[in-house]
Length: 305
Image (cartoon, rainbow, N blue to C red; front, side, top):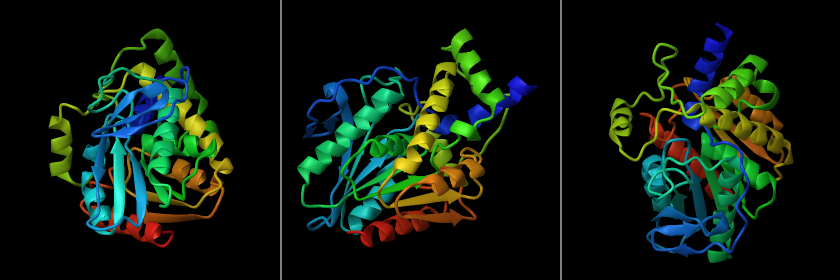
């Protein structure tokens, strides 16, 4: 029963899972081109851009969660933010979405290194503009770990971040994740017969996500263990953060554990703010009240740009 409960809990977090830890690719000068940006080691990563009608007031780098990809998560909010004067970039993380590496899990180190390379490329491309980062779920953990190691950004928004690492992860869960990765690393889990979760109150969005051939669902044992390692990195990084941050969390979230998210928020360094949505779920940017979330994020960035 303990192992069953452990896998159930980890499957709840699969929507923000990361890959296994591995060697970080060497950093190389990143370049932005049509439809792509160079990640760490020159890895080509698919890129989407939303431009405002006039001169941009600031740049936004949007980082998606596990299984998803840039425009799938951020098309709606990016159009909204562009309408408020922001220049928005959303890249597909290595191993996801439109990338040639889709379905090959790169490891937490590679994901973090890619984020740092892309952020540096955008800062170099737009030296006179503030740069904000918005990370959803796994993307929040990746961005937090990357920014704590240093980076020239002006603010971080964490939306339903993957936060159940460190002391917030009970030992049986950690042991189950380790055992699964060791014994059957490539087995993929649906959660059927173990746990049933709801990620949003937007049925149309959930149906579209389930039909999207680029969306990666069913996490493997290797990826579940990678989630644990990535969340450990994010939790350890939180006190070292030295910039303004905003945490967004839906009170109906069945994926990101409430106490873990609030503990992560409390541990963050720098000036921080928290917005709780009583009717919010895990897919905050897709929920029925999504425009309220888009607006709150825009107003927070506007106040700092």
